[in-house]
Image: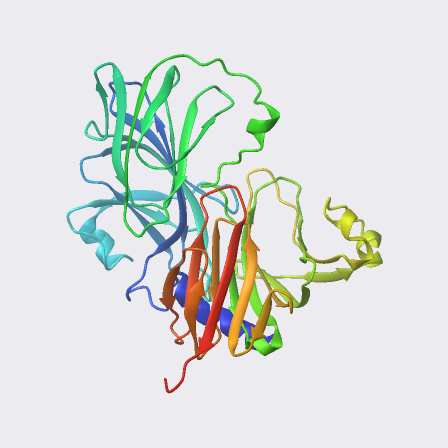
Length: 407
């Protein structure tokens, strides 16, 4: 357990959690922005910004007000409790001296007082920032059609058209869905290191709102999903890897998370914590008949029978408006998917989450990756591969590596 804890603490640096707030590295993570376009010709759009403060010890968060935009109707809510947070608009100079050393002096910021300091070792403080922007250069009418033309730096975004408009063009690969009230939503996951140069047009046209077909209800919005996972490979002859997976639970009344261990794998040393508070969460490791005795009825368990294996993480049932961000850690052994073939490490696995990462053992160099990945080096010198999947399907991952000689 101490070995896994040390690995996860070191890994916090590689997922955008710097050791010191004044050093390089972002103050935030896991951003999702929803733009709701208001009346055509107004130049106004409502922004709903789901964001996480990640700098250890931070007591405030700073949301920049983009140059050229006029912000009104602001509000901020703590995601964990559902309660409002206090905030005020400050200059860039004030932001630099009250918690954001890298602030742009020429910009204004919404300074949010967090509900608690960001916990150390990868902890978080989640919030929902709502505001209305007026920006006629980004949102305007052209020849009877509306245009939303705005570079978006946040990696997960959605744009919702006003009632009575239909999408006619969009330059960035996106999901399209009709919301319950009939409005059309365009959403995407930006898998590049650059801003997404989004430009979309919509024309007048009414679409009747109604219940979606069974097929349409299968098409979940990918950009809003919050699950991600990181694998830390041990030496391949052990067939073992440490991992953690993060998940946000929002459903009132829910008080547990059930992790079903994939057939062919065995789990050990489960642990978990509440990323909002840093508090430990108890874990129950159950197999075969013990699962049924515990009253668990996950659909996939029925097919696995007595070979089923689960880890259950219990927490206080959520009240309306509350949510919890879980980090669940385990060690898996899987000889079929992680092995040594001759002198070559082989790791193959299907990934279902939008964000997935694999960290090679120390002293190993990447030789093949069948799926496109962003490659980086962790603070302790290991090679990390990040896989982002903007689609609602499985990503087939095959990685090989060899030992570095004379490094």
